[in-house]
Image 1 (cartoon, helix red, strand yellow):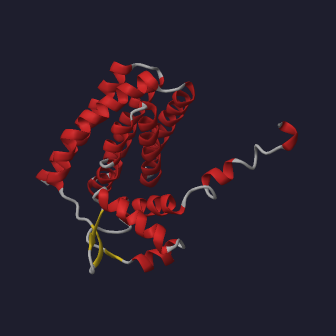
Image 2 (image 1 turned 90 degrees about the vertical axis):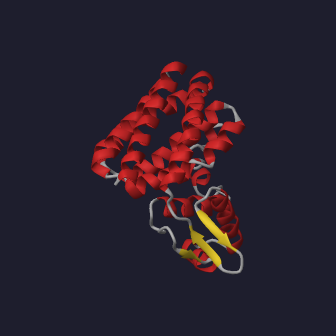
Image 3 (image 1 turned 30 degrees about the vertical axis):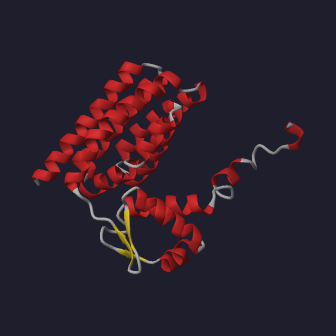
Length: 228
């Protein structure tokens, strides 16, 4: 196997060439919406997005349908596509469900994660602390996505995965819209790191408690945003 020397060439296709176009379109559009490069209320065109991302209109259309299911865009028949508004009241209703699912997923991940996944949780915890110190919100967004995907995979429960998938992007966009970066990013990153560390250590109760601390912090932030 070593004589063929494929190891150095294999990672690149997994990151770029082997990503289905629909998945690539979804990831890029989700990031643009969540990080407010596409603002709430903005009207979108499949043709314009296809040109901008250099992806065909069919993958763009499929990605937009997925984003519509997740509440990030509204598809208006014969009128176009609009980026959905941010609803603070809806965020609080979402939090009621998200808290329970996040706690369950943290506990299950701590119990069921593979050795390889535990090593990655340790790596994510270290990177979270670095991102918190740097105040790099885009880096945090991407690391948060990686963290959420890893937790979901480690639960070995497809129903929990589907449920949290409908909430994550909407929640991240709220954070980008209302967060004061210097005040909240470091604390949020540390709270994420604590969950990752507990999962890596296989401490289910500690992981669930760390998840609750993160949800407490986010919910308090939401109430202050509503009051503001």
